[in-house]
Length: 364
Image (cartoon, rainbow, N blue to C red; front, side, top):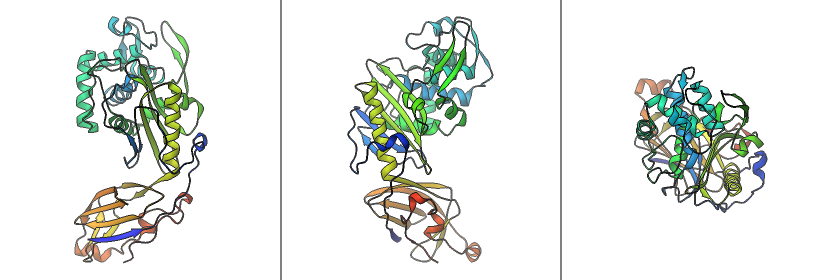
């Protein structure tokens, strides 16, 4: 194997509201469980009991929303049932037999947290809440790849068997944020609403979405059994950061935790892209190329070690593995046409927030 050490030098990113917390150490978090990840790389940058099963409340609707967007026809008209109207909790005041396009129901679900909208969506797509819940669990495992979550309804009302983890919710959100329609809806600050019984302006229930341009979404929640739950995303030049906090003692505590974790992430971590086709060499001189685009997120303290191990590219920071990606062996005739690559090509250093971060590690 071939190992190269890349020195890193930290720089601070600026993110509007997120300049309040400037500390190298991990922030103090009052929520019972929490997590911070990079959306691009999926790297876990902070975790507090992130695998503990918790009640999610209305952040459940993140999954309901992305499933409805992907599996439904947004222009299709949905007829609201009596059962959907009778669902308790937050509402968009739907009426029995009211007809509404699926897209508007998704907006009511994600912006105003309408439980009745969630039930109407579930019945429309699967026939019943119970059938839709089964599809939700299959989607979680088959499409997103999380295994420590089980949902029994589309809206997040309490059920002892309705649970998730901070880690799973971060991965669910990472998946959902890849969809532009979902992003547009959860990032909407306000929306004119016209229903049969209710004409109003909906204001996004996520306070930070309304207050700060850097915040791109996504959802808050509360039932007495769950405490205050919150999923938040913020975008910077090089990445998007996802924070999940579960069972905060108050809504303001949840928002404070989100701010602190986003500050910690944006001030102490950076993400770079490695483009598919980049060439690497092992200690025997054999060349390999990266099979697909990859992202690596790293901190401002340790050195990065880049290792070509078999047909894998492994990047570590201290004792933490930051990236493992498959490499393809380059055949002899292809090798003759390749000129190789160095770190300045493999990792973009043109952005000011990466100034002097990476030293050259390959030069063929």
